[in-house]
Image 1: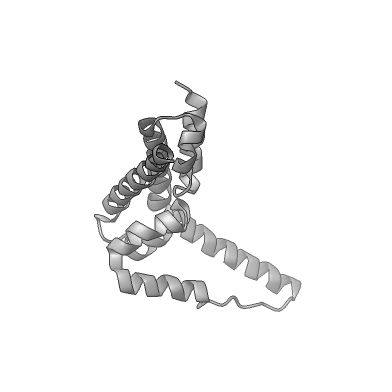
Image 2: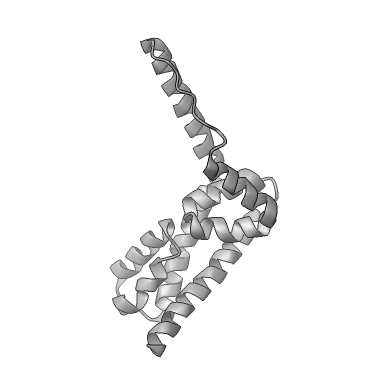
Length: 156
């Protein structure tokens, strides 16, 4: 039992859940060890960022307001930030076309768990089952990615 290796996998999974299980065979971990380490990291990150999303959004707004006040005091012109960027349009297009289940499945996986979970919470936090779906889809993705990785290592 290598505690530090498990901890490393859990910490890497808190940020980029998609790629961490792929390192399991190279590190000498079994399928179960890799899966559990990655799922623990993913669950911790999803919980922190889902339930703390309102705090992170408020803090972002406060920082933006503070920055604007500093620029006003210095007499510098305010450079207005574009709100409808191509990335924001893409996110809204995905949200409208796939709905809640597509967003809870894809955003934490492809955007990273912190960013994807905060965006999902921004759209669907008022629905009580959203966090359940995030955890369920993280588990499903963990099984698929880890299983695919170990299947490929045995085939090759």
